[in-house]
Length: 197
Image (cartoon, rainbow, N blue to C red; front, side, top):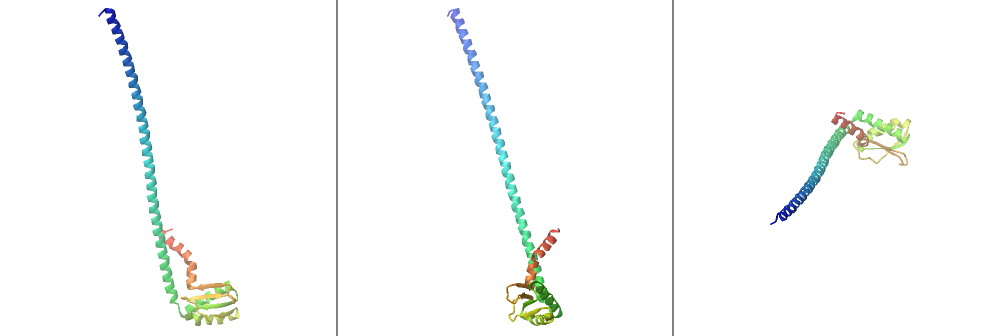
């Protein structure tokens, strides 16, 4: 082959090699850029997944803590109600044991409180076991008030119920009713004792 043909072939071959190397370098740069882009996207996706996982874990943690706190609060309320009920049962037991002058004095206060609410004219009801003591009280108060003792006994462990003569207003001052009216205050007292507040 002639020298001119060999030089031309070598020149064309050199140009082709330079073009191929340039294309290869461009391809390598593009590939590296794509790999870097995919790496960044993957890192961002992993960060989002970790963040979402952390948020979900925190949410589950709060739910667990909230459920535990609610359970503890419910247990505390049940204990409080048990303590209040026990106090009421003890008080009812003690009250039902009243007799004689002690009972008559307590019934006298209850009738007077009823008169303060109802007014000077009232019908008085009581348990059949307390009828004698209440009759004595009605008799003693007859100078200040017009009281009548109802023939119909009421079911109660003690105390009285007063009503206006026409029955439109009634004041229940039985021991049970008084204890029930005291329940919120007693519940508060027991709660403060249990919590140390």
